[in-house]
Amino acid sequence: MNEEEAKAIQEIAKTTHQGINALEKAGGYLSMLIGGSLEQAIGIFEDKLKYSRWERKIRLLDRANEFLKNRSINCPTIPVPLKLVIPILEAGSIEDDDEIQDIYAQILANSADKSFKLTIKRTYIDVLQNLSGLEIDILRKLYSFNFEDIWNIGVWTTNFPSLELTQPSQCENLRPPKDIEIALANMFRLGLINRESTYNGCEIYSLVKPTLFGKEFVQICGIA
View 1: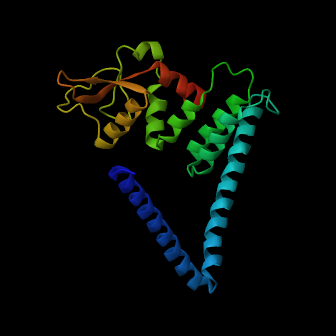
View 2 (view 1 turned 45 degrees about the horizontal axis):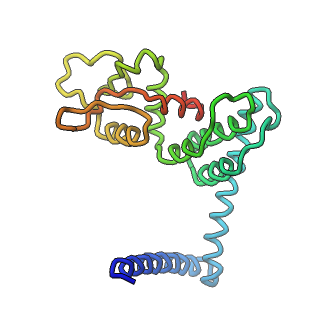
View 3 (view 1 turned 90 degrees about the vertical axis):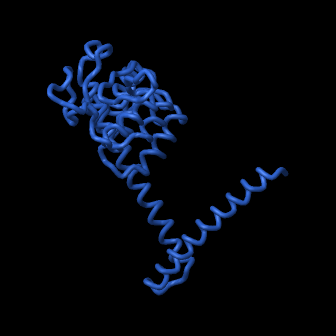
């Protein structure tokens, strides 16, 4: 074992030990509150987590069923591969935002609909896990424009939540608010938008453009 491997093992052990201590501390406090044992208290934590995730899975499945019924489909018309079902249920069950969880349900419904023409891949689920509600809102607004109209010219984000086709006038600083810039930077990292850059490589998010991947992503997710 070399020195780097030894350090890595030590760090893992340290992190694991800290996690166990935190759980025992929380469990110890709860055990005092309920007048029970540490094992009983930790069991309550675990049961609550399992129950919460199960509730969220039930809601996700119910919503997917609703989306299919809205298309006059009473049951899945094609089997959904486990490589899609499992990550959708796992990711969707820990999502506490109903609007975002509905997107997982849309993907599941589309996967179960034989007439849905686009190919659904695990990649789209991974991307969705990396998006916030704000970023989804930006995507919805961006891809509400006709794709061909803005693919080359882009839209201005300076006055978000409004996206504009023409450069804002009488504006010294075209940059959007910082939280919008950070959201756009993440969306660029995920391949959902394109952005401009200066000659020295600085990122510019005042003007952004859609991508082919982004277009298909919002269609599969039912965002736009």
